[in-house]
Length: 142
Image (cartoon, rainbow, N blue to C red; front, side, top):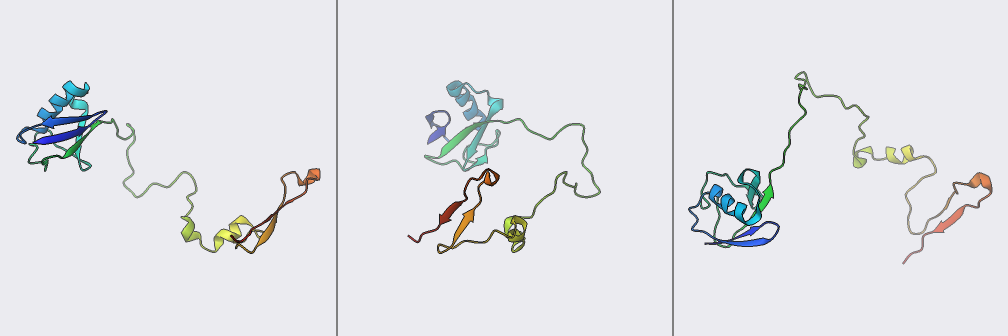
């Protein structure tokens, strides 16, 4: 059976299908130099188990297996989660824009409105106190 291994370069592997994923990882270590413990082989985005055979994992002729490196992760040590309920955010959380609805215009101020292609408006200059004229913008239909 012919497989494709997508790593830093694309490799072609010839296997019987009865090999374990760990056997393939050992071969990949020789090709890419990445140790077996650091490798994660993915088939259609799902990781393959080391002890399973390729056929048991659903690998078939001309499949592409992707190689990624194992990432370290995990939570912070020394902190226990509260079991009483959800934690409160340390900063104010705004609802999504679509839930704010008509209040959005009020939050932005009374001078703001939705514009159409027929509208024109004035944008005051940031230096209005220094006698810089306002800029006039007009939307034109195309």
